[in-house]
Length: 248
Image 1 (tube, rainbow, N blue to C red):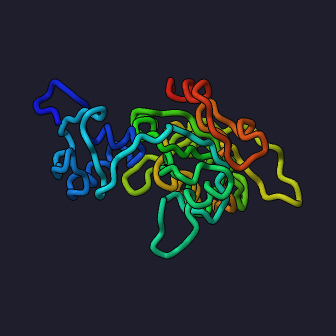
Image 2 (image 1 turned 180 degrees about the horizontal axis):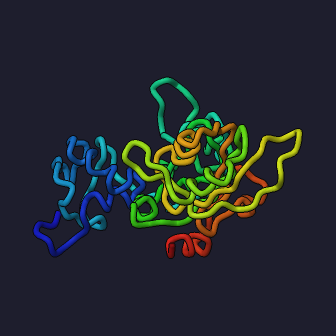
């Protein structure tokens, strides 16, 4: 293990690169004493190690680098964006493995969709990638279709773009896009583009404006759209499709 600031890599970065957690998620793993380097428990996340020479273990098991993979998935409703649920509800990591994700990988979602929402989401075992895409400074546009009990009037539409304050946060959309007119068989819907996503952003925005959300689906993440799924529930993304996303 390397001391000082000069040599090696920070331990949390090495854990993230091996798919054990994101960099942020690796900090409590280290602080709780679950990580050892050359047989010595290390509790300082900033400790520097040489992954080529040092023997790093997590819960007593050697840390092995996983092949880095990132998937684009079409999350159904009724799935939690978490790796485990105390109530036993279905999780996205378990679901992903039933539709083609490598079952040996420890996957994490980039961002979230709530239990009742559906649509595009990224899953990866690349902790560095998850950290970069999940950082607040990364503002890839996201497009949604929201089905409502009724369409907003002109005043509500202006409020959607101007923003509504809720729980100390300003909730707004960058753009409202044209959608087909409602039919007797389907409720009215809007397409909204967000620049940043708060927790339950669209649902809270619509509720604040007196509108009821009947269904919510994410259609786009930056340059990635439903077309990239090729009518499948999950596809692995090659590097050339990930690169434009990282540029946002």
